[in-house]
Amino acid sequence: VIAIGGGSALDAGKAIAFMVGQEQPLWAFEDIGDNWKRAKTNSIAAVIAIPTTAGTGSEVGRASVIVDESDQRKKIIFHPKMLPVYVIADPQLTVSLPAHLTAATGLDAFIHNFEAYCSPAYHPMADGIAREGMRLIKQYLPIAFHQGDDLNARGNMLAASTMGATAFQKGLGAIHALAHPLGAIYDAHHGLLNAILFPYVLIQNKSAIEKKISALARVLECQNTSFDGFLQWVIAFRQSLNIPNCLSEIGIDTVQAKAIGQLAVADPSAHGNPIAFTAEQYTLIFKNAVNGNMA
Image 1 (cartoon, one colour):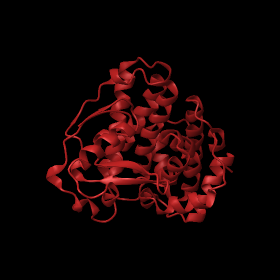
Image 2 (tube, helix red, strand yellow):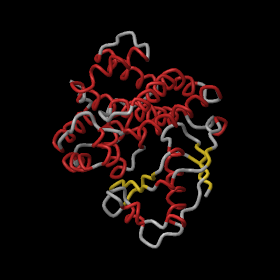
Image 3 (cartoon, one colour):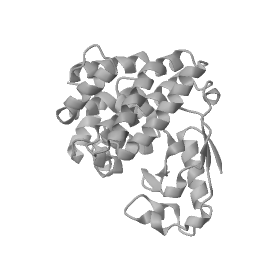
Image 4 (tube, one colour):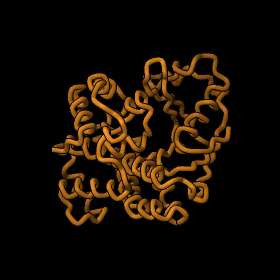
């Protein structure tokens, strides 16, 4: 199977390659426990992945995120053989990506690196990859955003995207735990959701990651390397890429706030967050992100 496109296209291609020889339904292989062992391994087709965005890093992943429309939930389908056998990461295939999608997918890649770095799991190599991935994105995403035909910037963004997906084998966190149900319910762009949610989750994680953030801020050469200085850099970086400040700006309200909190706490990404938030805390973060409350 040749899968070409953004993260959703690559995930769909990988899922097709996985399911072509299976006899059980797709949801039987949701990434829970050892469900992946139910698969007929020899029937899984090889995948050649050709990304046209620098964001999800799906081209180096062993899973697909698929929406189960029956319960409006994003589910992760996992198998080791879903990892593409070849990846063609050609920056020329990304030059036509519009600026707003360049920004959203680029910040998705940054947040993959960021949440992996902040995960309390122990993996020094993932931490090193994540730090360098974020440094590359800080340097090259603004160039790719303003000068879409800059192949050097586009190439470095593709590298940083694959680095993020490599690093987050260590874990993700609350940003993704909220973005997954929001994407399933509101059909909103995953990278854009992550980008908007970023500072609201960052604030709530402060007590657990303050020292890590100061070290990261030095790597990124932020003028103020304190936690608050990094937070202000994140907010300014988002603004420079025309990312909306709050979820209400993209038509999301708080009507389903309680349900969002319950779905977020049950999302697999929640396990990698530095703080084990309750459903009520996720609901509060979501409401803050809708209303633009960073107090």
